[in-house]
Length: 202
Image 1 (cartoon, rainbow, N blue to C red):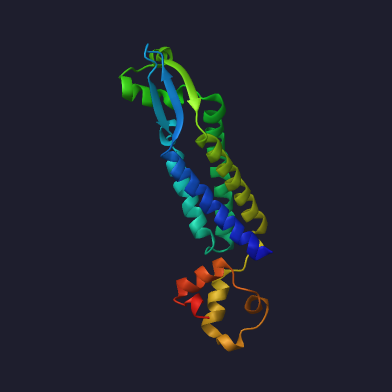
Image 2 (tube, helix red, strand yellow):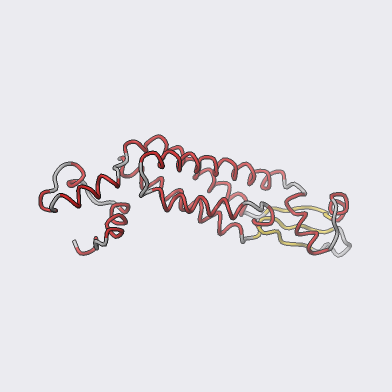
């Protein structure tokens, strides 16, 4: 059960970060201009929320490192994942539901050359969201859940450092106990590869 919790926390954190990175390049909002012809402009996620890509990269890095760190860093990384998910979720929800003018201002200014809140506001007829803000918001909810799961179960995860020590001092034929008898999971296979062992050779 704890092995599943660890795997779930790692996979959920990595997936949330990956969705955030992909989403940052996709169209989040369509701006219809009040220019007679009603031209439209596409606003990418990274333009709507400038910190979207950096926060997503941070979440992805946390997930990649979470499976190999010690107890203290598990708590730190879990708390960071929770914080990143909460902050990103709030910012994404604002864009998805409130659609503030600030989320499209830079795109409108780049396309038209107009600056200033009033000038941009007068030019924007309406702002229409795509599905990407909702998809990304769900990813941040998953990240928050992964952070909570990490903090709650971190102490019961098997320590990588102790595993490496046992492997270095104990012959494989002499390995006993729960750690030796339980099935390998995906995280264990990754740990084996990092030591130079090929788990597919078993």
